[in-house]
Length: 68
Ligand SMILES: [Zn+2]
Image (cartoon, rainbow, N blue to C red; front, top):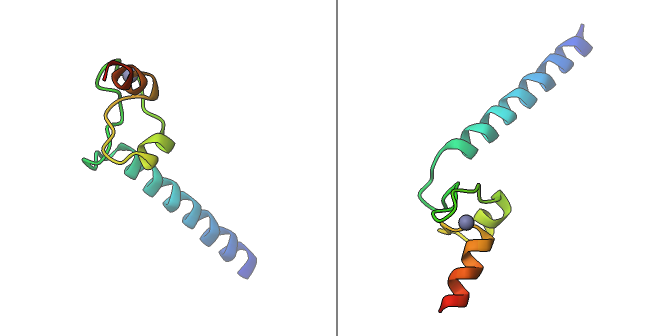
């Protein structure tokens, strides 16, 4: 029965990890916007991680920088 317990434990950990990931993805941290302020398109997680505090998608950011 140890195998079943191990499988159950592994499953619980997988579900818990997924729940934490989902929760952290939905919670607004104040660091980066989930959606672009200009076009309301979702900002990729990689960009939000790479550019803390960003509020524009890559496309709108390029337009903004081009105007400067
Ligand atoms: Zn945008």
